[in-house]
Image 1 (cartoon, helix red, strand yellow):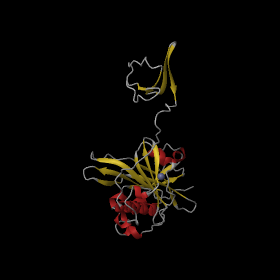
Image 2 (image 1 turned 90 degrees about the vertical axis):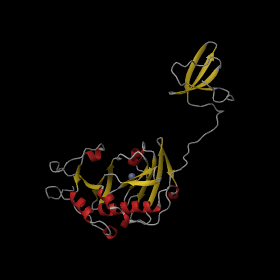
Image 3 (image 1 turned 120 degrees about the vertical axis):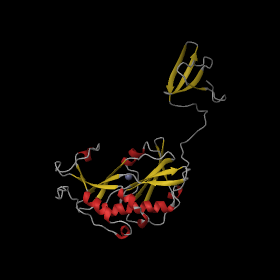
Image 4 (image 1 turned 120 degrees about the horizontal axis):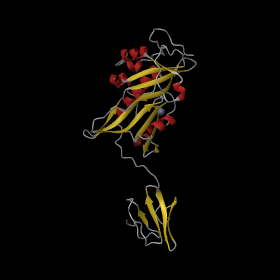
Length: 295
Ligand SMILES: [Zn+2]
């Protein structure tokens, strides 16, 4: 064991092995262990080791920080992704998500649109509003590194929700939320997580090469195909609809209804139509052809 700095009044040692003998010379020293920092004494009448929270004051100060070295998200790609979010929000009132990977071979950012399910509810007017977005990170080629994700809050404000923070705690990287989609530009909120800590990025320009306007006409149809929309319903018709097991109690008590009709419409309105389409909300059709009771 070595003292990291001979100028310390109380030397610091690192305990890196269970059988490692502790020094017997210094009357007082600090010991860094897996269980924390300890102040140890070699007193004429005893030897002690007591856990302490305060490090030696002669150490230099240090503050947490994050310095970004991410490649910047290309402007066109960001505008395509916002176009994707915009189409999904307008058609279904649903959130959507895109993952970002870094291709080390091509040295470029690659968008990944995972299979995803948007859960939507309906307000008193029958208008859809986003409730939850479910997706899993697909397996990636070995030369790709996941570096972040974007998801929409549709017309809600862009911020990191409690659910977002929970989802992202063990997913280091960029987390960009796009909200207020009825405005151009929409609202952006970016945070970066690393080792469980969250850092707010104050300027979109730190992670993106800019944003001008959304590109709905340039949204690949394959992206739209990855989305399934389901309606959240408190209908008691559990004999008709397949309930989806959720850990969230509020959703667990409800029934998830597959929106097969809107999924079909999603596939029929592609290409250039997506730019001008303002599909009204359609009542989901149950598998037996009836209309589920929203109450
Ligand atoms: Zn969110």
